[in-house]
Image (cartoon, rainbow, N blue to C red; front, top):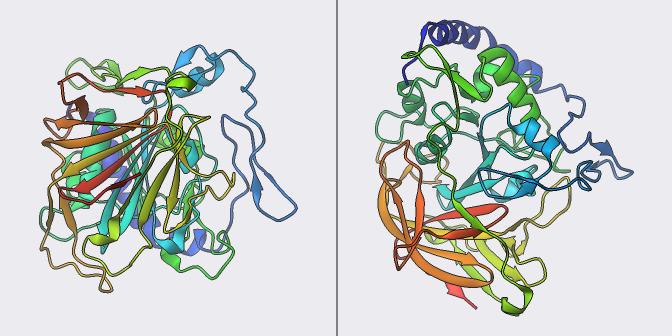
Length: 407
């Protein structure tokens, strides 16, 4: 789908706004903390300890009749009425040790994790059916995440703070421009600023380096996309001049209900160390997924500690965990930040091996993705498409040959 005249006007105005706001927004939003936003759950309140407290979901007691198209989780009709007005959004969230615990990850529908540089992983949290009042810290764009978010719409919302821009195959900002995303569905803090984005130096309760302080909220981002970019659940086609829903041509992953309690194993765990890749960070990026029999979920630990959401204090959990093995190479584009290593390139297209953790068991299989905009599909070794349990799916992107310890 090419850009129509309206999109071209938005591009032109967006570039002008970028020049006017790039410097000003930093000065403004670095020193102002916004009031607490609202979400489809409820507005947040501040507890006695000064931390945000998320009240009970106000839709919790309504019948769950509507299926989230991204992960099959069931929600009420009022919740579907909310998500049906918007489009999927991928938010780049950093996972350096200094940035934990993050905000908003427990509300994502799908999460992708891959090493950015030097063994330090970065996350892309994809939101559509749930809202997160606060999400972050938000970090920069990387090329492989562009391939994965491209699966979710012709113009998916992509949220980041700058990005790799060295000439070469890892030039994420150049690719965003090439795709026609710049100043349209691309939500870059450098061109938007406060109050959609803000900096909070005190959020983690300690001295925090500037690169770990950018936050936003999904409602703020969806509202900005709708009001400023005219992006809701539809795009306007140049060919027909008609509005086209974001999910035209989108195929859901297959889903199923949880295995019966009697069919679940008593225990299961899997762990692997991202820091085995181009890094000296020892166990800071050791990931462990521990199966919880009662909830039929996998509880996440990171760096030897329970990985929690800052706002809810909930340990992060996933209903499904995918280990997606890909080729890994170095971009060799001259980038070297503070000894963290060069930009990396993953084989995001084609086919490869995979492991699926579902119902406390391991299923071996494959993944397949034909083009940038094609959806990644997952199959077991018999060639049947994998059926996931309803709920958050976490996709771990690992190099071929990555050691996995399963207990």
